[in-house]
Image (cartoon, rainbow, N blue to C red; front, top):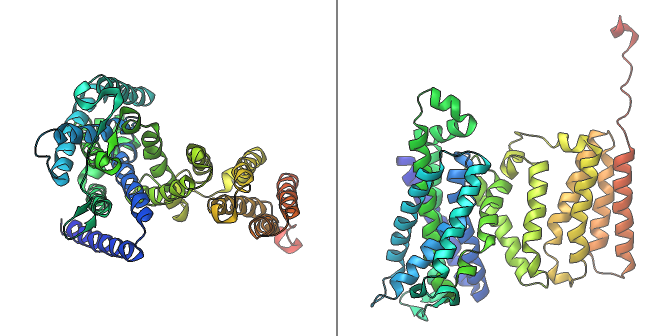
Length: 422
């Protein structure tokens, strides 16, 4: 309990420093985009409680998020409107109750059947909201928000501050669960549910707790959403992006710790916000998909697991076909990004880094570590300003790296000395 309080205070201080720095920068888009990244941190952390800690993949993240959003719309029509902190609390209660009910109905299912059931819940709720005229139905509903807030200033900064507070709460809850007996019970279910149940672990009870906590936190993230946009409709509240990102971010960061969703949400959320201000705004899901493919193959335990060396990259590097597929897949976004202006090609860096890592792993495995020099040279030629033919040279260097990575084989081991052989 004491460590959780200390962790909460540390996160609150860090959050206050981040908010203060953002105010000093004084860029409106920074708050607008930062809100989305913070929102994804909360959603990814909430999903990880059920999907990562307990091992039950939930495709219904958008449903709980939308419940929080439409709870705010419903209460907004009451005069006078409730303050957003109260709406957040009410959204958490409603989404938590729905999460409990969903868990009671579906947690006897396992694997893909549970995932499909959660997706069906999102479809049912979206159909209900679409046909509920009091909440605007398919036309959506407008929410008029104030321009300024006393002592804080612009309303967008106020919303960011609230979402920053939700991040602190969500991370504290996730860390407290991870280090408690409840977290051990979740881990036992994730590792082997039948063995856990045979050992006396109350699996159904723990799974219901997981769905309730996860749903409540997602509802908290959705409550300020109508005030963020000023307008909410079923297509935006139940957007497929929320379900995909809620799963992708913990997977990319790592699902066995509270740090993983934080890393994945900051990385992926920031990349998507950068993409939104480029002509490639419509390929956000493509970027997410490519990163998921990279993460599943290169780092099955996420970035956190790769750093902790729980799994090495040797399995993918040892298979020439897998190496070639990954190498070719990560060249695709670089080709499209290269068409943009240099100031809009920030996303290109991460794919160059992946290509360099692939060449490094393959070259080290086959005993030719110099192979990594080719994608490094290609990255330099492809990124630095210059004539168009430099990109052709970069493409040629990548092609050579791929061909050599497939053609080179580990050298023959040196024969043992005659004395050692005897």
